[in-house]
Length: 38
Picture (cartoon, rainbow, N blue to C red):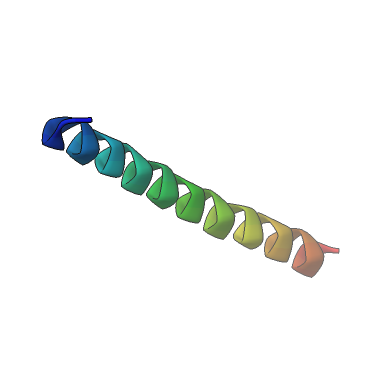
């Protein structure tokens, strides 16, 4: 694979990791509010 291909791959990987981290934080906050609400 070319350098551009590797750069694109790493960029996509970082975007996926960032999205996963945001989702985990959102989900944890949602669970926390559900537990505090009940």
